[in-house]
Image (cartoon, rainbow, N blue to C red):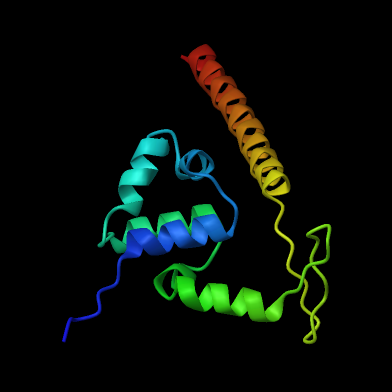
Length: 140
């Protein structure tokens, strides 16, 4: 009997696709040394360092356990049995009162807004550092 193996790269891909996030967008979230090709290579790996898995989970804004426990067939079964859609493909509230609606464009806008806030904070920190250095130079 074949032993069941966990392919974390495929699980990352499944969660990423379920969230409607492209590889390019994930690369942006992971940092400057990441690109679409590197994300693709990551998704091809069966084993992933726990620290990197944690970083990917943070970039996807999900708990790492969601990635570790992701099962494509269970996700398909869950969504097909839980959510119903009308002709406009907009989600309806189901019998347990849950509504599922992930808009990839809204998700990207949210990511870009977070990046903008981070960039503005970095610029402010840079300006403060320059001011401190200038004051130290004047004292010398």
